[in-house]
Length: 119
Image 1 (spheres, rainbow, N blue to C red):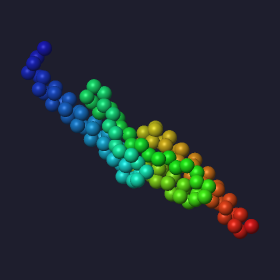
Image 2 (image 1 turned 180 degrees about the horizontal axis):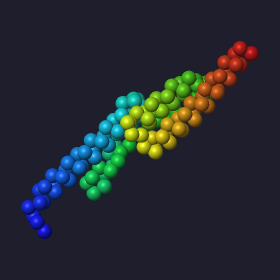
Image 3 (image 1 turned 60 degrees about the vertical axis):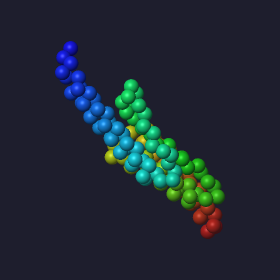
Image 4 (image 1 turned 135 degrees about the vertical axis):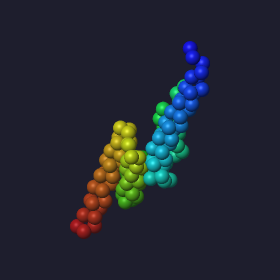
């Protein structure tokens, strides 16, 4: 083994770790910025000292029959947050899809309330 290359290897490894961490953190920061108060802290996942992923928890809206507009607004925030990074993951698309489903339910409820009002 050539011990003269060990410092170069460590420097390359450190650069890779910094690059991974920077990319992961930027992705999660985009979620957090768009999700605002509905999001939790940024969590970076590590394996063997190397950042491998991350996540930001977000409060998925529940249908509020008394205030469907609030449900719609919260669903829009979740959708925006899930799709905020330049490179959304498959999990990000799943979260956006779930929020779109809740939003559609709230919109139907809101439209039915309007129809009842004018009937």
